Image (tube, each protein chain N blue to C red):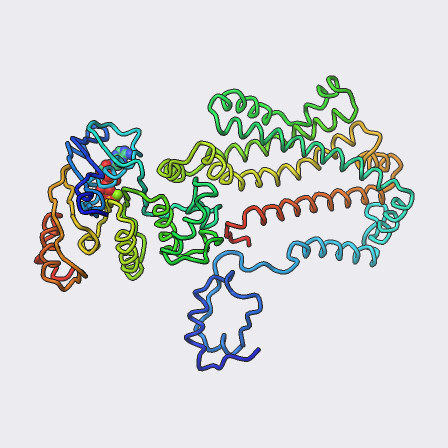
Length: 244
Length: 299
Ligand SMILES: Nc1ncnc2c1ncn2[C@@H]1O[C@H](COP(=O)(O)OP(=O)(O)OP(=O)(O)O)[C@@H](O)[C@H]1O
Ligand SMILES: [Mg+2]
């Protein structure tokens, strides 16, 4: 994508407020995400990350709130569970709702996530990591301008998670959607995102660019510096945890 | 096939044990040394793998006991004639064509009732499962109908429809509608909220949502209803035929009772049993085909 296009906004959030009963979960939030920008959202459990993501995805019908949201028409969501329909084959899950025209792109998307040849398998025949890759393919085949992901790798083991990071990085480099990735994992955020937000008490209390060029290794001192900064924002006593 | 040398055994066995039984190739072969060398082999929870012809074993055992009882004179033939006597009567009934014609009449009634019942039950379930207005009109009456045993409605239906085929098929249909409706409706309403969300984020059309998410998701429920319905259609058949009929298996049995022909009664019962089992088998087969995406313990 041309450099000037990157300055265009994919997401514009103004004065977003969401509450459940008397409890205000999101309090007057503003946020812009540029096209093709990869943003990670951190926050304590219960801080409202999912609430925010669901607001962006337009899935919060019954929630009280005010504010304005602008998101692209082409928007995909990856959930924590792969959320495949068990009674549809892998390829049918990828092309759900696209009809016959989606078949060829669907096959390509499966190939991209390393699942070529598994088109006719049932979801139950795949491992957890493979199911999550199908979910990624299902999102990508729609060429989203914005990809929303709520702890998409939360249920995977550490090794599979690292492989999924590589895959996601590669896919994002190729398709360049804007991404909002909700995660608990500080290292995951640092190794994937261009920019990291921390949500606390209904507000974004941190907005930090990650300027590490090239491969991001955990040993890199800049990696360590960002991690300490984020951990202290999250209220974790950094000195007690030499290696997270 | 060669034996795996025991030097592998410990390690391989660990791998092998972690694999679900259903993944093992049918020709898999475990040399005895393998089992002995391994630490305690643990059984999978659940009923274990299917036994070949498992369903047939129980009935076969009953027939064997019956045969033995008759052969040793433990059973009074007036109460329960010997199996070979039954087979003889069976042959006679076929030879003079009575069994075939009664069987045909009964099957037509049962299958017509079943067919109408399935179509009506499904239609009502879909209407009431997919729209609140439909539910408001349909669900109540069905619940009331469910509270009234179909067989108790026979007198009324006889007044309305006479004692001909229409009345008989109607009674069977009414019986079948209820389980089909109940289970299908239930499944349509129990659709997982997560899939609804998914369909929304994928911007699926209403039509795709119904065809890809709601209806396929309700198939297991429908099949459960179908199993009840199939059994019920034969049960209702027996009753309508024994009350007021001039043909059919029930009539044949009723007539035999008047003349004290125990053999014929038993032939009739055996035919009912075979029909019931066969139709249940057909539904199971259908289940296996339609639900191949589901891996359950009862594999
Ligand atoms: N439907 C709801 N009704 C009432 N309260 C809710 C509802 N959904 C969420 N909440 C509350 O809103 C707060 C934020 O929830 P949310 O799921 O957004 O947190 P989160 O940051 O995603 O947490 P986690 O990291 O554990 O997933 C929580 O305190 C939760 O109890
Ligand atoms: Mg959450």
